[in-house]
Length: 434
Image (cartoon, rainbow, N blue to C red; front, side):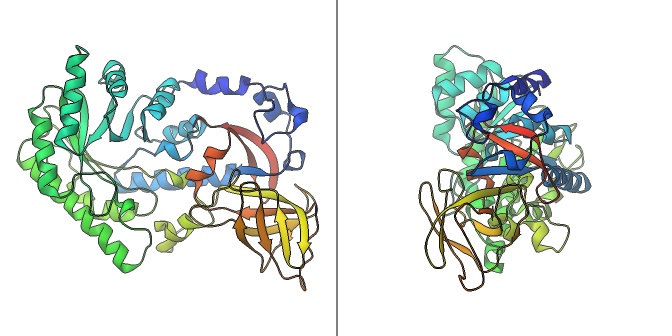
């Protein structure tokens, strides 16, 4: 990445646009705010914070796991849209960054990400022309295709633009009821043949996303995931046997979000090859996972479904928390908090009350038996046992959250604490670009 572009974020002046920092910080450069050693108690609610220790451990944990299994990691950057965090992932050996759309491609390239993967099809003419103009062998941009019509769209657009560029693509296999992707091996092979015959495209791999086919870790869901991955393996073998991969291309098989990456590696790792043993002479076959949520993890959906939670090994740590203040206690056993859907994620489960205390950044106690029962745009409804728990206006509640992908997009700036439990010094400010 472009270190100077990332470092320049510390020069941004804090102001009313950054709801995570206090009004007293207006006019300060972000870097100056960080070096001053401010603490959690100097901020205000509602608030989302990150945990530096947890994120550091999570990045190291998956990087070491990928090293051990001999697979590449191209983290899905759309989870955070935070170049500062991408830089940490790349520093620890990530192949590159995966994104979901054209706008995200532009952000990543602006911050100097050299290798990019678009986990989607290029169908917007502006996007096609842009990729054709900036992608190089040294700074590639991979994208996916799942139909012969998409192949035709790309060819037609490049021809109209007078471009002689050749775009690297992977054929995407989908599954019934899933999201994108050719439905079935035969349909995917038709796409592969169309790419192979195209003068504007080069086929460099097979792609897919198992996470759209299952949402739990029960036996039926895991069987669905593994069955789909088996079909990806078959597709790769057919493309390889048919000589459809582009000349001189290093071949990539890619799947794997943050929920089933262990199954991806278990099923697809036999395809990995150093070159002549399993692929065309002089070329290798690499397996790439695209886990993105792991760097933040959570206290909800991913905590329950992550492979490291399921297999009994060292799990990822929750790297984000919400902080909300009681603004009303209108009925016995009911408190209204000052954080809502505009501040905290709710799509994969409601926030979970964890701790309560009289002041932000002060001593807190476990909040047992409490739950968030509903969330409005700007408020949470928290029920609790009025007979055993005292909750008063002004009290602060720490909330466990689920799904980092829909937490980050609500904040342009997110304070990072050294350690949410032990050292609540603000050690960084993470900028997002959604």
